[in-house]
Amino acid sequence: MFMLYKFRSMRVPEFPEHENFNPGDTSRVTQLGKFLRRLKLDELPQLLNVLKGDMSLVGPRPEIARWIAAYPERWAKVLKVKPGITDNASILFRREEYLLATSEDPEKTYREVILPKKLDLYEEYVVKRSFFGDIKLIFKTLFSILLKK
Image 1 (cartoon, helix red, strand yellow):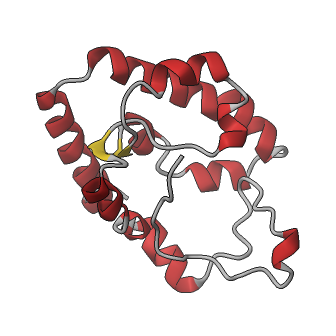
Image 2 (cartoon, rainbow, N blue to C red; image 1 turned 90 degrees about the vertical axis):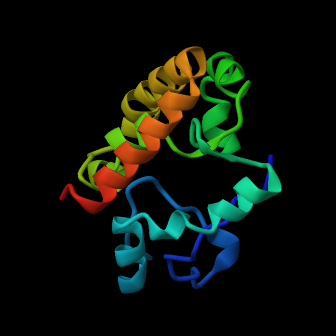
């Protein structure tokens, strides 16, 4: 467990004690937040996490405890490596918020469709990770942010 740094892209809830961000709920995302999220600029502060040693540039994305508890045996394998700022799942699910927002049951879609696929990619990364593979993922990430719509 560690503090993950990000730029704030959402309004603070009117009643913080009732804060419960649901998957796919973009109602609190600000206009600036939409811009930051679209270009993944909200992730830049995570470079501080890398400098502190909490994260690496490439590796499985960190997840909240609630979703780790959903698949503990799979996460036990994934958590053997440091989490990263980018990975194949980040690229594949670049529009995850949109997928969840258009789902009839966003929580179920995340738990039963998206998260298992992410875990497949995370487990594959853990087994096959390499220096050159990480370099390739960094370029793939930059390409997906800068050149693809």
